[in-house]
Image 1 (cartoon, helix red, strand yellow):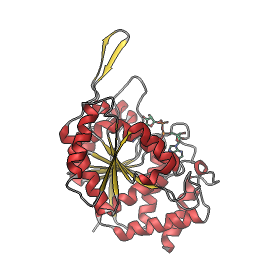
Image 2 (image 1 turned 30 degrees about the vertical axis):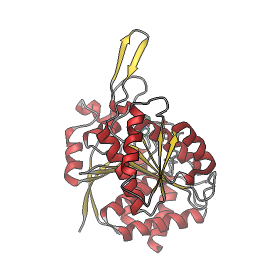
Image 3 (image 1 turned 180 degrees about the vertical axis):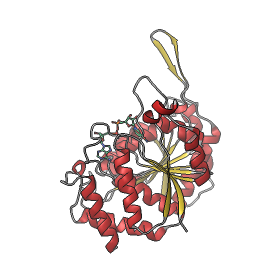
Image 4 (image 1 turned 120 degrees about the horizontal axis):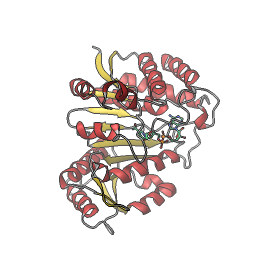
Length: 334
Ligand code: NAI
């Protein structure tokens, strides 16, 4: 039976990596009917909104979406479509596995950690105001409800995936109430998971530990902003933003997207690395129970990288098209 899935190609390099990912999924043999939906600046010109209602309706109906990156203006302009989507669908857990791949020189051999980022509140709540000229205020919103469910998600994930430790990255020495609440919830949830070791680390020390011995941290659970920054740091450990996937998970729906943004500096040049979105689509296939197709793509990726076929961001020579074609052929042999 075919799965009906919402596809948001996004902007910048989004349509290029989304197209590559569609071809790779097709090569894996999985049957998917796509409902293509537009969101972001381009649609705003036609529709007067960056996130038309039918995009949310399509995801609510299909329960699963694959999404390319969508750019957000800096310091002015419309609110991030990505943040709005996560909040509107209550996609509270942002799961980002950070693993080294063969043939891509990592900072450290065998890096294998997972960041579980709270996805709906913190400084991303969008509560900002100018108190007076020259004085701006952003409100960091943290609730026990969101802290408990993200900690439960992280411990559950660790248990299911046979992980040993969940590390909470916080700044409760300074933000005693907000980050203190996260820590309190983490300690409470940890009691229900006696086989998983809880580990508390201040977020700045966490960043330092990530570049010294990341695997010690294992699964990292943290707030929205810290999670955003630590994920890019993690991507840097394993070869860059071109390879790290992500999943936004809620109780009703899930939206799979890469960690990277729309990369306007390379958009339209045919050199974007589609691996991060392809790996996100592998997470999507596992979520759908399509493990055979997921394994085929994973094997295809391994043999493609082992053969030294890499895009330019990874120090290779090939563009998006050649990488995708080689990968599709490898999947055919897997
Ligand atoms: P970015 O991730 O788009 O790019 C950072 C650097 O990494 C650039 O040099 C880019 O060329 C490179 N890069 C990223 N992905 C790549 C890929 N697949 N292949 C090869 N090189 C790649 O981050 P930046 O420049 O900070 O943000 C650009 C726009 O993307 C902004 O408008 C931002 O708001 C948006 N953004 C959207 C996200 C989403 O849709 N979930 C996430 C992060 C940023």
